[in-house]
Image 1 (tube, rainbow, N blue to C red):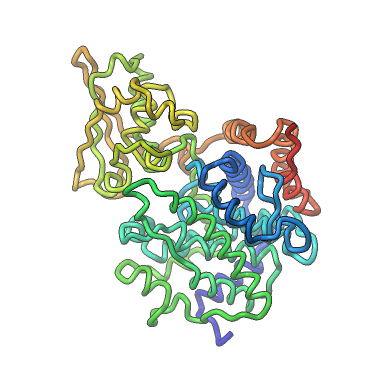
Image 2 (tube, one colour):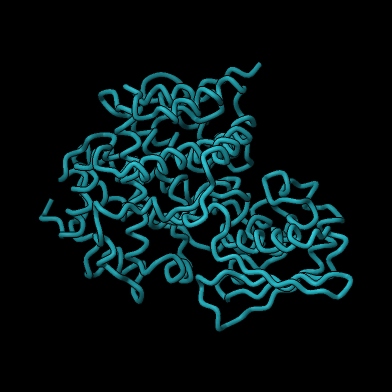
Length: 463
């Protein structure tokens, strides 16, 4: 390539040079959790409406057996090309809003499908240690690109869905690392990823399925970019530069912070900033769920005791999650009022709470009608909502949770991550197969060939 800019060259070097021994144990441990969590979310999402429709389309045009179709579609027994599998598995991982957040934003649903698809495209066995390292690098690159756009809120408030715009870079880094591309070709892969970026927030107005597609398309884009680079296709050396057509000038013309691409590179691992979801809803709803749960718990209140719930929240969260349309799963999962109502009426906001029967429940609807949102222009986009519960006796209780469960500062512990995985994986795999997947992830650094994990995810033993 014409000499890559310093930031692109630095990201390419990080991708090609990082080894498992370079990573702090805390980062390795967290990466295992995120890998397992993403696989659980994807296995549960394998039966989603989005994945089902996508597979109908793809199996009509993609090979499902023979050379080139060795990448498993997790939990289905099907196989596609690496690119096709990355697309479908990425959609599945994001389909039920259970995948992690705080990366590009949804890095797990982008990076993990790309990395495992690349394992099947590699010319030689890829060790589990190298796979996990590729996942860490992918998270790092994806998040750095988002931070270079000015961060989550500035980029998304412009209408871009960062999972789709920044995710391809992380997926390309992970795939390039798995494929063992040299620094020059890795730089080309990252540069090509910029041409595959896209994804707009228009889905927020009607709960359209397109949101779920953004993760899959980003995963597919990264695999495609890495494979193209491996075969000699070039990308722009100035992909991040402040030139006409450069990624940051195009996608973040007023908020770009280019220095974020390399700040603390190789020392500060961005996966450490990511969160795991205990609830099946947009991450921006979780603090309110925890807040109302804390009030109910401390004061021993039931849904019948609650006369009203007032939520004071910032304009950004209100714009994204202030709706009360629960006709579709996607719309309900973006609704902060519904998440709060589900916690009060049903005792939780897990996946079952978002089933159609519960969305139509008169009990949930009754609580939903007692919730009032107040937009506070003085609250910045990172300030969590303030929840006030008023009881039928006239008592009021206010609660704000700055560090919701699952966040980087209030993480899920190992048993909780495993319990979440077990519950989700059971929707697609028999117990012994799900346990084998979890065990493989637990001992991932010792796997000589990561195809072992690919095989476990794809084989369907259920009678």
